[in-house]
Length: 443
Image (cartoon, rainbow, N blue to C red; front, side, top):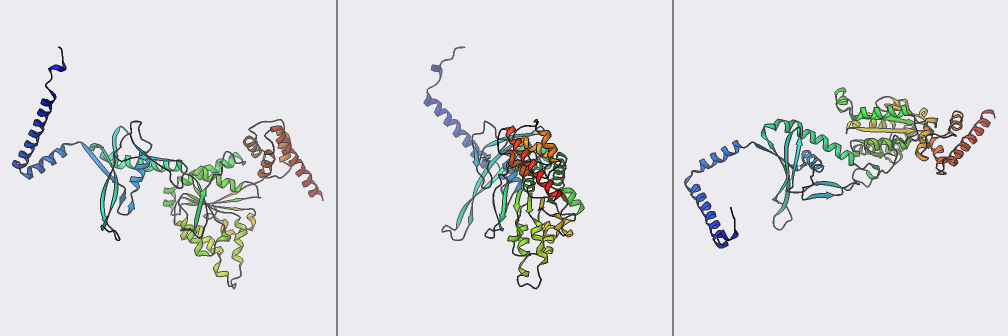
C-alpha cells in the first residue's frame, strides 16, 4: 500500500475537525451533568474508586508543630534510591556534617522495590495561608510538603508493618554512616552549655597499641551495649555504660576514647569538672548532651578531692560535691537520655573513692599499661609500615626489662622514615631507660 502526504486533508481541515470533536465532548459532558442526578455522580465516582487496586499513603512533613520522623526517614532513604532517569535532585550541606546530603525534589517520581512489591513515591507540596500578627495582609503563605506512597492495596499490611519500619531503620543507618563526629566542650554562653567542633582524631582500634585480646573484648562490649536497648529496658536500667581507663600518662587513654567515638560514630562531650560551678550546673550539662554520645571526664582523681572541701567554707555551697557527681552518673538525672557512655580516666586508680568504682558507675575497668612487644609491633606497622625486622628480637628483650609508654616509643619511631634508623633510635631509648632503672634499683 502506497502512502503519500498528498492524500492527507489540508491542515486547516484537520484543526477544524479536532475542534469539532472537542466541542462535542464538552457538550456531551454538560448534558450528562444536567441530566444525571448528583447522587448518581457520587455513586459512580465511588464505584470507580472501589474498582481501583491502588492505595496511596500520605506522609506529611509535620504533625502539627512536630516534625514527622517518618517523613524525615523517607527523605533520607529515597536520597539513596535516585535513579539516573531522575531529572531533578536537591543537594545541601548540613551545618554540622562534612558530606553533602542528596534528597529528592518536588514532583520527582521514585520507584522502589521491597520483597517483590513495587512502590511508587512522589514528593508534593501545597501552599496555605496562615494568619500572622504584624503582617499587613493578615496572613502568610506556608509550604506544606508531603510524600505520596502508592502501591497495590493487597500489600497494605506489608507496607505499613514491614516496609515503613524498614525505612526508619535504614534511614538511621544511613545517617550514622555519614555522620561527622564532633567534640563538645563546656560553653556557658551557649544555649545548652556546650559548643562543638569537628573531631578529626584519626585513632581507630586498629592503630591502638594495645593487645589484640583487649581490643577484641572492648569491641565486643561496645557492640553488646549498642544492641542492648531491649535488654536495658527489660531489666529496668538506664541505657548507659561506664568505663574507667587508668594507667600512667602517655598510655593512650585519650586516643582510646577517640577510637571508640570513631567506631560507634558517637559525639564526644569533654567535661572538665573544674569548670563546673555547682551541682545544678552539672545536671544542666548532662541534660544538654545528646543520645548516642560519649561523656569524658579526664583525670577524675584530680577532681574527686572536692568532696573533702570544708563544709563551713562560704564558697562550699557553690561547688560540686562527690554526691553530686554520683547522682550525675548514676542517679535519676542519668536516665534522661539513651545510649550514653561515660568514660573516666585517671593516672592513679588507688586515689578514687570506692563509691565511684562500683558497677553501674564504672562498669568496665581497663588498665592502660606500658608498651608491650605486641603493642610495639602495632606501632611499627603504623609508623614504619613493617611487620618484621632483624632488630625486633633486641627490642622484645628490652621491653621485658624496662617500662616505657607507647607515646615514648612512637616519638622515637617518628624520628625517621627509614626503618633501620628509627629502630636504632628506639633501641637507644630502651637501653638508656634500662641503665637508669638499674641504677635506681641498686642505689
